[in-house]
Image (cartoon, rainbow, N blue to C red; front, side, top):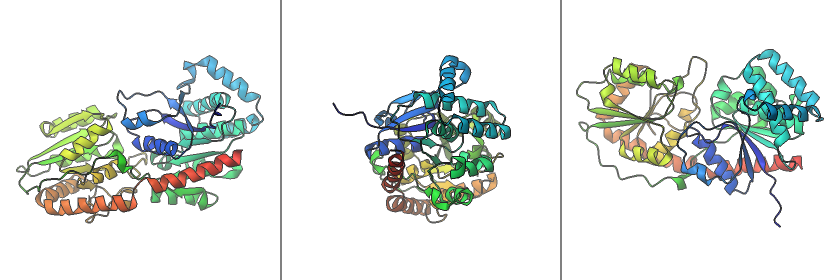
Length: 415
């Protein structure tokens, strides 16, 4: 009989999620690199569609109690089991210290979920790996202490820029049972976390990159003339940091003789507000709201478009994008790109070379859109350069090889 593989426990916010293709891509690649995984999700799925990537993952998926009141007996069994573990005194002390600084139901829920996770993890689990440095890493950290296991994290965007500094420092420090190591997907994020860590080597820069095997070759795009209709598209959640409110205001400033249409793909909490904004500014008839789409639908839309627009900005609470995978996906189809110099976007797009980066103000966005419409040859040239850079510097394989090696070493240390 073939022995059961020792599976790395992967803690995620929710599974599956259409907006987190970068996580699905990574986990599928880690499996294909020979790492057995088991997914532990803090939330049940809410999307009605999935990507083909999700179907490729072989790992079993388990769901923790999304709210402790939903499964009180399961939570009680977890708490009783936790109290009998050698690590309970330490985990309880750290939780109480955390709760004193963050008296929220979410913090209580993190500890309860961790107790359930610690009880239900297979006995031979060699470690935990959390996607996102805020809630999932808290659950992984408490559970790792209870079980006496190492843990690691992958940090992305909101978790880096909206988490309190004390929490980031402690999750990066060995004397507070911090992570064995962490990875993050942008240079700006890596520099920020390395400055908070006890040693910079605790945090690695690992670009997600793109698995180009999942994408068709770019289409042969007909030469667009300055007077031709301009087909714009965006992919992103309808939330503040994506900047779609300012893009809609920019549309209202475009010249009256510019024939344009914008297609948006994605869901989000601001959907109704943004649709009302489009009505109020008189541009609603030029907009198609497609809602959530799977990966093949997204790529088909990119192949039919003339320009990809992502007007990212820093939200009021500090939240911001990292390096959105959709920019690389657009580049894979040689689709010209207009975005903003927020966070790590300039790490992939150098303005004037690989695309256009402009301020996120409506007037600046309107000027950039008008310029691109009037100079299609320049947009085509930059799209070619972005595609070449994607092939040369932002493919997925190198990052996966590095991450798989670090995770294997962590798992071996547990053994």
